[in-house]
Amino acid sequence: MVSEAPPFWWTKTGWQAIYLYPLSFVYGRISGAIMQHRRRHALPVPVVCIGNFTVGGAGKTPTAIAIARAAKARGLTPGFLSRGYGGSLDVTTVVDPHHHRSTAVGDEPLLLAREALTVISRRRVAGAEKLVAEGVDLVIMDDGFQSARLLVDYALIVVDSRRGIGNGWVVPSGPVRAPLEVQMRQLDAILKVGKGDAADRFVRQASRSGKPVLVANVTPQAADDLAGRSVLAYAGIADPKKFYRTLEELGAVIVDRADFPDHHHLADDEISDLLSRAERQGLQLVTTAKDSVRLSGGHGRSAELSEKSRVVEIDMVFDDPKAPDLIIDRAIEACRRRRLGKKA
Image (cartoon, rainbow, N blue to C red; front, side, top):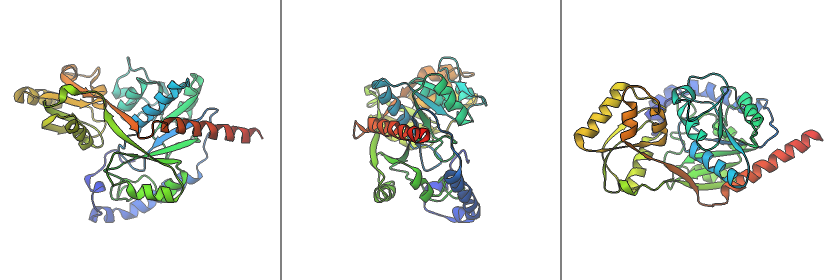
C-alpha cells in the first residue's frame, strides 16, 4: 500500500493515472479478490470496522472514538484494534499512552488509547483475540476494511465530503484501495463527513443499493482563545487543508503554515525552524492532536515545541445523535445471528 498520496490522485485524471493503469488493473484484481474470497476469522464478540474507500485520512479515528464513547455510555467495554501504522513494533502490543511513544506504536493508536483499551498488531486476528482476552466485548477496528482477516459484523465507510475519492482510480493510478463495486457490496453504511459535494456520487450509489447513509461533521472542541489570534499552523496529516479550515472557522488568523507528510515525525531542524518562525513573527503555534502525540517524549527541542503549541482537539458529531447506538445495535445483532447459525 502506498504510504503517501501523490497530488495527482486528488485532481482530474491526467497522464500519470493513465500511464499507471496497467499496474492499477492488476492491483485492483488482486485487492478485489482478497476482499471477496479471503477466509475470515470470527470472534465471539461484535466487530465494528471503521474504514474508507481510499488511501489517506477521511476521519476514521474520530469516528472510531465516537463509537467507543457511545458504547461506554451504555455499559459496554469497547476496545480498539489498529495495525499501528507509523510505529516500529511488530508484535501484538497493548498500547500504554503514558509509556509508549508514537515511533513505537504509531500516532493514531496513542489517540485511541486515551479513550479505551487499544491493541496494535500487524496480525489483526491475534490483536483481536488479545482484546477479547482482556475483557473487551466490542471490537472497533480503525481501518482494515479491505484487508483484515477478521469477520466484520458492521462495516462503516467514512467519506470526506470535500475530497471524495479523488480521481476515482485504483492504486497506483489513484487513491482507491479496491474496485468500488466490490467495496460497495461489503459495506453496511456510508458516513459522509462535512458539507461538501464530492461524496454525493457515492451517497446516491449507496442509496440505490439500499445502504444507509449517515452524516457527521468534525467539530472542534472549545477554542475561544484562538479567535482573532495570529497563528503559525503546522500539520502532518493526510489533508492539512482540513485542519486549516477548522482554524479559520474558529476565527484564527493563519499568518504562516507548514505542511508535513501524514504520520511524519519532525526532525530536529524542522522543530527548530517552526520555533524560530513563530518567535520571529510573534505567532502562536497551533497543531492537531495527532501531531501533538508524535512530539511526546521526542528528541531535541520537541518538548519545547509541544509546550508552546496550542492543540486543537476535534470530535466527530453525527447529525443523528442516535446513529452510534444504531451502529452498535446492528453489530451486536449480526454477531448474535452468526453465533446462533454456527451453533445450529
